[in-house]
Image (cartoon, rainbow over all chains, first blue to last red; front, side, top):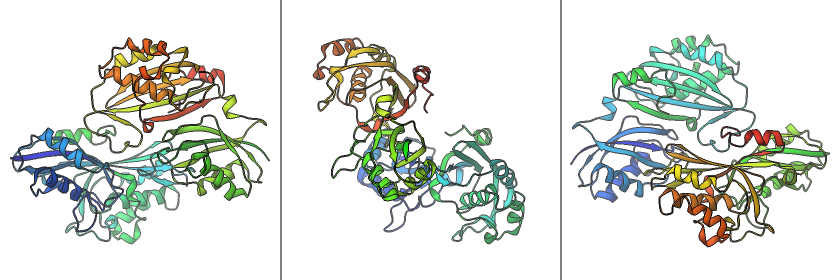
Length: 260
Length: 260
């Protein structure tokens, strides 16, 4: 008996996000169900990030209190045999007592991928947003740079966001071109609901030339959701990595290949 | 009116292969149906490679005789709007009269990917074969090397293969390790049905230590299908590229990043 730290990957497509909800498929729901089937114990599985409906995770970090006699590796293999094919436990290991992935996370790395081409993607169609109009990545990068630092992100908060405070710290934000993909890497300590996707939607309006790059600062300062662009679709977003160590997080920020 | 050369990508998962069959979903079938919807003409679409049931293609080359007034780019966009989301026309351009992708192909590049890990893949689960046992890639490579050159590949022919001759030329065959993936690149002028997958199945028996690498030569010489390993699953196989130029093909062989 003791805390076990899980590293989890999932394709978010058919889930209503991480957080368990009655009568809806959720990642937390299928994990807790698999735990119950395997151990006979009702077990709470908590995660560092409560990803939204349709959002993927490459390395979500979660925790459960192991009330079974299984060692972590046996727990991993047993859960993987019971979980659906779009969720997998990559790693399970003992964690210090009281480990709380949500509270102890120092920073998170998200990635958003746009498929910027006349022609839609086939193999990666569930992991990219297809935008046909050519996008100006330099303008998108100038606009995104304005958001780095501590700001009130009210203009980019989802309509159903219930956070009490709207000030967040973004440590890094950078678009790069890998034709036909445009990739946004974002590092932050915490995010408002749909914040990354609202930033992406706004960057795309700038990238296609509908708005000048300078408008990003106005939108941020307005603190009005109506000023920003549409919410980019969930399928392009993936939680890449959660850092629990300040040093590790500082090294990761701005190094886009970390967490791949 | 004239020949149009198409570059096509598809996820083979839900198709019974390229070649049209009554009452079965096929890639040729959905392409010819989309052509008919778009142009009102019954149009034959022929391909360089008749990929098997479940096999993918990143750059299949096909040809049709355009009896409509659409220019190739309009044909591409129109077909893409009508095709299902697992098939896409990447490119359409005019081809010389009499262009026959099957006869004029100089060589083909196939890739097979094994996910070699205790833990199954999530994001790429439709594009890899999951093998849990650790595999010895050096042994697999020694075994594969024996097959390069012109040989009678009877031992690796599928049970339902109807080819009249069983002698084929393999120009390159190499495994490499990209943990957790093992990647096989194969270049050849032509292949027997299920030949690549039977070679992969045999290499895996060697890689997990059930057979010595030297057994590959015995299997090849036996010309008996019963001597070789099981057929590896179709989902790991992808037709990467078809070359129509001798020079281009010779440069591509052994250069694994070509055609990515």
